[in-house]
Length: 430
Ligand SMILES: Cc1cc2nc3c(=O)[nH]c(=O)nc-3n(C[C@H](O)[C@H](O)[C@H](O)COP(=O)(O)OP(=O)(O)OC[C@H]3O[C@@H](n4cnc5c(N)ncnc54)[C@H](O)[C@@H]3O)c2cc1C
Image 1 (cartoon, rainbow, N blue to C red):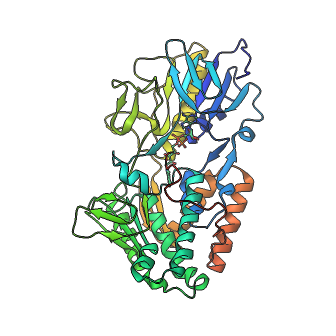
Image 2: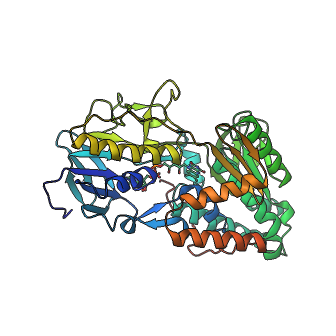
Image 3: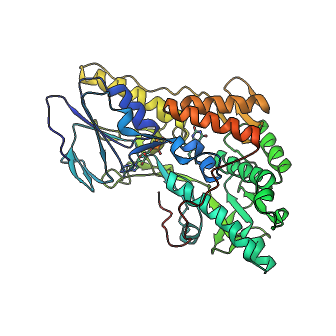
């Protein structure tokens, strides 16, 4: 890997997501040699992926080069690589560009889509965990309309304009809202020769309410918003299969749809070597103690989505969201410095700053620990928070300008099929 051994202890971080980057920023100027490994050379701001999928933002504006983040850190190395295994006995990570020894290892690999073992759904559905996957979805949505114009068979044409989104967490809700806005504001202008009223957006949720992790007030309001936008919200309905044409459910309704978007769950992206049964808990996450140390190791840590730190308040670990990842990364950075200086590490405690989701123009729901609100103000709060957490001044400016432009013009200009998507020929893996 071409990384020299120095007198500083080597900390290897796998993953440049919210957790890995937050840790990197803490360690950057310390007396450690830090090596960050990621299979992408950029950090992805996942909460805005749905805007890339729906042509609201260009992909570059939600990605940031990792090398630029760490460029001012004197003892920092970045390597573009896929980590395939961890050899805990020899304290070594095995990657597709070679092996590397560590003194301390931090696993911050995040999560991947969970199909709950249904390989048919995995094969035929679209997912949205990475920028390439979001671009695939963007292409497919537009290709569907280009195909629909050509179809004389009404059923086939309607299937191309029928979208089924499975899972009504923030991702499903935000995507459904964005598709509804495209239906209303853009498609009638772009496709005057298509009867856009035949486009259906179905949001399917297996439980009794959408946004189940938020307050009931937020769920109800978000559902009102979606229905107002013309989204069909199906609750207490479970999708059981999808063969690429028909979506089957456990109810009496089945959908004929060319596109099924799976946002029904994620699971920890574990790596061979630290994936033993005794280490893995609900959601395929790695069990860690209050210092983020992996059970049974004092030199291996796990952070963010992949880590399950169980406590009385969080019996299944912290929510798989950006804030726990950021806070754990920062905390571990301080703890590692303490440990290397012979001091005691301090236990992590999560500060819940609340959660939010937007449904579209002027419509959002916000749950803060002390109060909850919805509507235009919530929408501005949502935008401000997302701009604040985006990395890079240029990205913030580009996103801000895009949003103002889209708001004033009722537009989404990035509706481009740059990279045609060939359904069934590309893998949907993360
Ligand atoms: C569509 C979508 C919308 C979301 N919206 C919100 C939201 O609104 N609010 C919110 O709080 N959270 C949201 N989340 C969740 C949030 O993005 C995650 O909780 C957060 O990214 C977790 O951070 P992390 O650092 O643990 O993992 P990630 O940010 O996923 O980073 C993991 C990194 O590890 C790398 N990696 C993984 N495996 C390997 C390997 N074997 N070798 C090399 N590199 C590897 C990946 O390339 C990636 O860069 C959303 C997620 C998605 C997918």
